[in-house]
Image 1 (tube, rainbow, N blue to C red):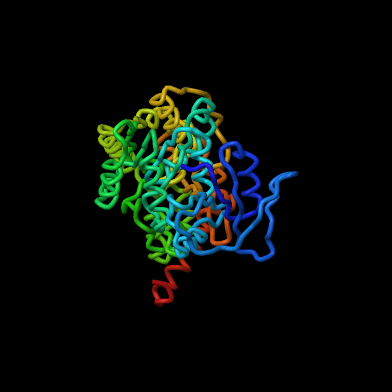
Image 2: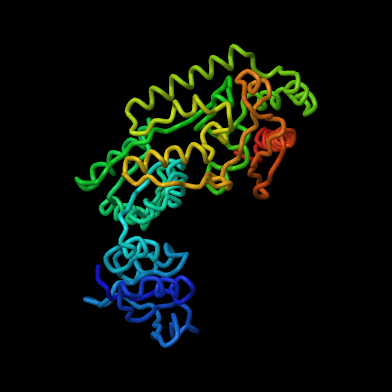
Length: 393
């Protein structure tokens, strides 16, 4: 990559890039859509002219670095002006990755991998050598992001990908695995779900709650993952007080059903781990009673993510301590664990006294167990009515 660069943008990102990496390049000038910006002054004694955007000139000198949080919009503008992504221009995050001199660890797949990447950033030996980059396999990518992902596939030293049973994700994984360099270390992590805390007669993971509404095309909304028993109560027209009464009097799930469901979870997890480079089932089995390990059936608490991260560090021979953060690494609601289930499983904490993270249409809030049930009941009851009368799809 050429060391002569042009900054698109003259704000704080551009100043930070100049101050942190000025020894890595020669800055020629700046570009901005703002007619008021005519000079870029990153630090005392340094002044660069700022031009307006123009069509690409053949054999033009310098690579454009987009120094803006809205880099995809500017990438689109540059493409229309005749510039080629990753040939004529890159974004500042990619430039930071390249100029850092660190090896790229590409994490591709479900959101667990993003959480693992965040954990790894806190391991000193890892961070001294590697830069984690995460891409999801479930959110549609723009053309620019597709090309950006392709760049990372070609330049990564380590690939950790999410093994999944769906045909779509299998095709994506095979495409990526077929394009990595021969000397890339490849590790496969299977999709981990755990319904032991949340047994359901009608399994709902990976399916939208029938009483939920998509928001802007993205599945994650309040109560995205349904509770089949509560949904049944709503459909029957049970009152909230009757729901509370049933829960408090342990009328939700029988012991035989809960234990049978849990046994099925161990069998499924152990089967999935056969072909995986990571092993987590034994850890879950030994520790799930001591503290909550899953926020809901499909998302982990930080403890599990740290266990996975330790295994990554072992594979890369850079074991170092990591501080377990209090703030959740996966932003998703914590589901209520029924007291009858907690008693049967012999959980070592009082599920009635738990404070649960709950995502609502008004943002995040902390709720107790009774308020969680109340919010679920009221929200899903209203959505059910709206769907019945065709106000919602």
